[in-house]
Image (cartoon, rainbow, N blue to C red; front, side, top):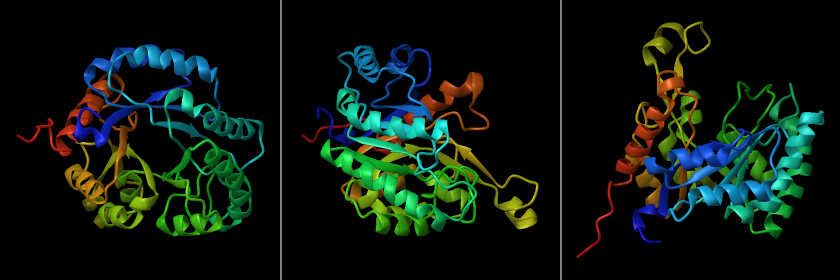
Length: 298
């Protein structure tokens, strides 16, 4: 690697379902992103070898990686769209090498409307098979930790959204290549302190999303967390409550390397016409949190 500071790269997510992801990458590449996470929502609607080739052509000679691919949906259920999600996981695992990717990330899935424990038999069946398939190809699988409006008692998408659930699912399928796509945002939504979590869980953190949160403690004190007033907002890094210098320092202290890919399209302020303004601010903020420009020792 030409720049040791880039043992932790700063990048962003790219919608694989979009009409022309490669054109999008080519357009935003000059802003200085160091990695991209192409991702799909429920269905892989592209020929993956063709897409990989197009994205590599768009990146060209730039020192930019695509170490993680995303597949977001519910692979544990059995409607047509859920079966498409499961096929998407299989397809991304099989084609990861074409992108240079070593990790596929997304939701665990969930038996809809049931407690987390009720999803475990199906989780074990599906993820035992997927983890073996991925291990055969040298690929890791990482679970995004968003609750998707679910909780312990019920939900539609994901069971990997609390540390208690992580303990259970990694015990259920104790595969070395199953881990987390972690970010502070979803922990803060639960009022969990994310920093001690890094120290405990870093061996299972395979990929990091650049997403933050702003907690309105005055709302919590007056209205609680189940009232009509919104008590937390998802934010892009640099606009939320997290000190990313601390996050990156904790990751470095643990010897972690990989990509922090910004998950845009959530910030209530920097969105729509201000979307890329917010993402580029986050990019530069995270680079500064990483230590700024690399300076070689004399």
